[in-house]
Image (cartoon, rainbow, N blue to C red; front, side):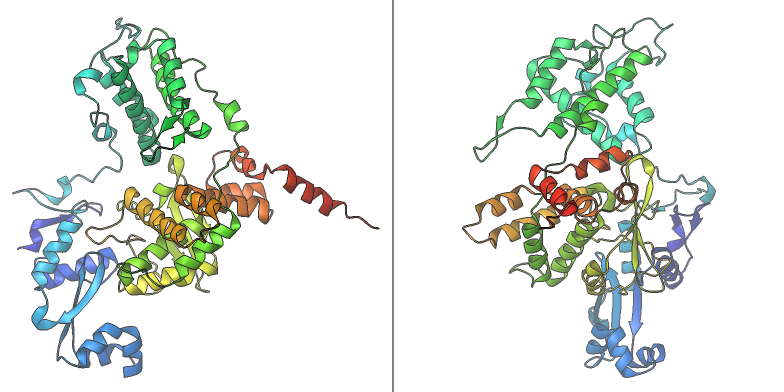
Length: 492
């Protein structure tokens, strides 16, 4: 392959890679923040380290291999560095091609005669690409109902069917945040699925009675696969209705609808003021999970994957982040970690509303994170110029939302199997728990257990309103009694 046929679209302006394989590998190593292909001999190892003891400590796998072979090759594959004898290693050009294709969002082959400056940078958010036909027939949505406004003079959107109107709504209301976009699309797909089951639709044909029936369906109990009767949490119902109400209100304001059948459907701000988080794990359950995470890998789980699971658990447990906030954004190089002179870590994430947030990580969580980095061939502390995902996947560049969620759920499931048989309540809680339960626990630890000022806790959690943070301060009667007794001790 000719490396100069590839464009780096992650810089401004885009530029071609160097023509030689070695120079291209050096360029990529600097751009990605980790080595890609190194040829080691004992002489080269000694040249980079003051002593053999230092070489053994800094490069243990390379040092061990060189004791039995003249040359070792260290190369990047599937998110980590591997070390093999030279005879068993892939060629440098093969490694280069794999890395380029793995990072195809940033590097791409240039078309014949294409100038580097003409390369388009990848878009961070593409509402049109995310929109509904997954599970929703395009023909079902691409039509107008009885309440759609056919008068061009007052229909400021200038579209004649729901599919185009939904795209414009997502582009205006959700194009700045991948989290908001994901939430809106999920809720609109849920409404569309219900409409199709009931023989209704499209959206602009729904009456107020239809939307009230949808609200009742969301609140109705249902039976899961295990035969248990479950009811949707009030917060989930509120979010679903808020998304639907937002769509219809925006359509009415812009003139696409002649009426707003969803007026008052969601409780809105009043529901948020009375919202109280209830999905918590008891302190004993969290302590139990911490002990399981600190233990040895279970049978059948490779050590490096166990170290990754521990690192993921640690970030959610001690960072209080939302599930999607640990998903790697290559264009923004987020989330990332800063390390100060005292080797203290600060996690930087992109939260709701495209708001950046800095979260100091406590020292208690750093051994697990450093151990994972060493396991994948990275230095214990991230260097200042590193542009790498915090969590790597085995087959790709970084874990997505589902991968991160599955790793946390796997640790919860393992912890549930190690709960004593008599403690059925803890086992049931661990079987239901998710990553957001850890966020609720982090917030409760700050606000209730340690009395962190609400503005500080709000900044750490990334809440838009301090009233949301204050909801964690609402306590039960027993906790309120303990606070009162502590404030007015019995002098007798």
